[in-house]
Image 1 (spheres, rainbow, N blue to C red):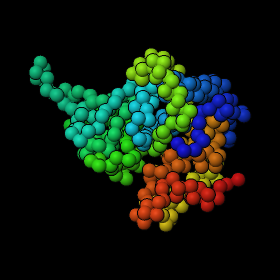
Image 2 (cartoon, one colour):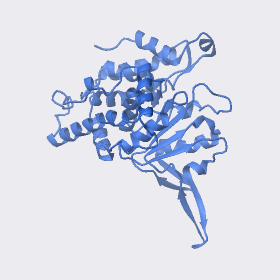
Image 3 (cartoon, rainbow, N blue to C red):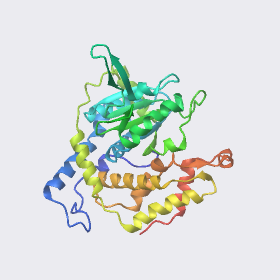
Length: 348
């Protein structure tokens, strides 16, 4: 994320004033304790991920927000920026089941979702689960497979189930898809259609490390670091902490003025002369969800306009489409969103 959304020590979650939802009559001591425990556990993820991945703190924050919102993530970055290693390390630190699928032009839908296989011993067809039956699915280079296979993930992402031969099979909980794509190499790729992009909660840009970070990375490798060995990474949170965090996020208060601000931002994208496609109502609900999650991670039980501003770009950048003439003039989705954030008045 190209903004200061971070789980840094200076913003480490702590007890919010009162830790009660305004207008909800407060919360029980047990609920408050579970919320604080979950927040501290998720904040510790940064230290565990840093054992293998240098930098990328804001990307880790975005992934945690997606997990809290039960949303999916689109990671975009040039090759070699540790996207795969980052997801593998996160799954280990969260003690979640992890599977990876390399999307290729010859990948079939059944290779992702699973298929019926004839069993000679029983003379019956039995369902053999595909890699989608996991907690954290890494869909590597998702835009290198044809639309038919890309679409095999739609039901899984939206309904959290897979239907084969008329039978719906539920997926584990939590279930999050982390898809990667290369932003510079489009030859032989199949760009994701707008309807499928809208299924991703956030789109995170994985930057190239800074000079100091790259020096630290080389020093680690010189000292014998093996990216395939994740034994140093210890589980610091799990499904229970995520469930407690989700419950706490749902209790985060939303002022009507902040809700109106979210709507005004999304409506402004539909009226922008630089965009031919603005943010859908689903995008507005996504921005609400990510803002509440970030507010809770920051130790508050209410959403501020700054929370909305911080999460607007990663939540909306893939939900807008530039006009061709704007692209020729060098406009970017982030740049247009930046202008909208500057012009739409925020509540006080």
